[in-house]
Image (cartoon, rainbow, N blue to C red; front, side):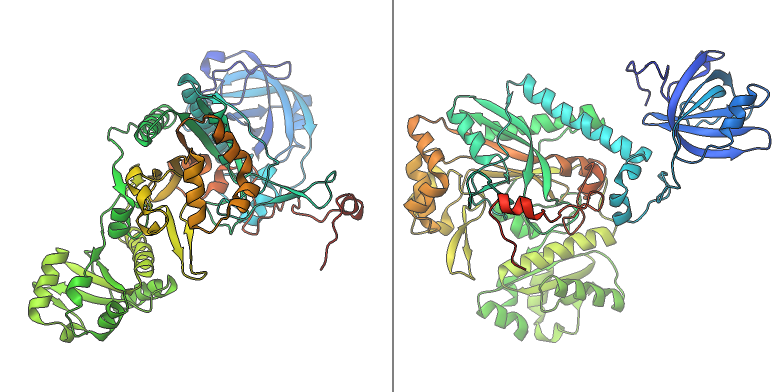
Length: 590
């Protein structure tokens, strides 16, 4: 893409993607890095690279002997400035792959801004080093054109969010980075206070409490491109610090918020990524999503829905199924319409086991019947019902029998794996809303109820009667936005009435004293006439990565951490010196 901004300075008249035949015979100045060096016996050709593109420059002793002599010393990644004249390339020598492929610049003057040692990684999109080396030399990795384009697209996407929200009456407000530690689902990063010995700040996992305070303060519509810091186990789509587009609105229903968010994403996808989303994002209940896909972030680009066959197979003589059902478990299956070798079946079974299953039973559909080594445990009429219930026309039925949570988790992983192996996943953008979430989940290990999401969610009006005796029946005004099987963000209508918030705390065993200690300032604020309000936190890094067809958010963060939450480039985290520890009243016990 041509850069249309005026980027001329005293050191350059053009960037390295701007020159065309229109500038033929003009004197120009260019700055950049030596991308490639070619000595053709009397002529030296260099591809000069900057953020914007490449321009071929030529050192010709017949054109300027002194410049030619200096040019012979150049090597890859030297940073230089050149002055010269634009010439049209010889017939047959144009490069249609470059914006500047019709011209070259004959150099009359060279200034070497800085020399480069032999780079430890190639600044070339075709050659990618391993992740650790890329992160150690991130300043070189970011020079690669693909990384510059990713940073550019990130900036454009962030600006599009800001513009849309500002246009729609949202006020951008920065919230504190040094806050009181509060439970939000992950571990806090904590910061010792020098002036208050023995006391600590927390870094925010999100701006949750402060955006609620802003609504009480009358801001009406707030947003922030916020840094969120969470001390949790890392994976491709997680970092210790990530960026979210955080927003909150007063005097709204959950449908108001979803409609606004949906419109915003349609606008940004079209404006920044030139894709037109012409469908309404489907609303899927949490219960339906778990039943059909085994998770609450379904990938809707392919089918392979799960079928609950517990009621059918309980009448079989297959002891594995009977025992599971007797102990309160369930049996579900999935129907991939494909052929599998014995080795492939064994591999799929091992995937199920890795994800928590004790095994996987299967039946193959051929000649209008189901066949398997477990068929002898199923009567003919039961098999016919199974065929009808599952709708199988070809392929296999893969069964998992266990506790409901395990069955869903295993079949969810198996479904996603089959989607990849059978090439069922398209390059579509499939958004959806997951709604009607339970407010609480039971913690078997500690024999108590926990919040399923964050603590500040308004229960549905019709479910208030179930607090506190039947918390399993309580659903909240909660909603997640999902794209291609990845949760982009979570939102809710907030529990803006102190008496309701206190009831919710009591279900999970948070005493009035503990609630006052952790959230007293928020509970006090609501006593002074807070509005009903709600909002969302949307993962900016995840969204940009997904729009580029990957889950790896590190490719779209300038300076990410590795899998150990370390930065190989700057060496963080590192040990403070003894003076710092003494000032903070901290002693490290090894």
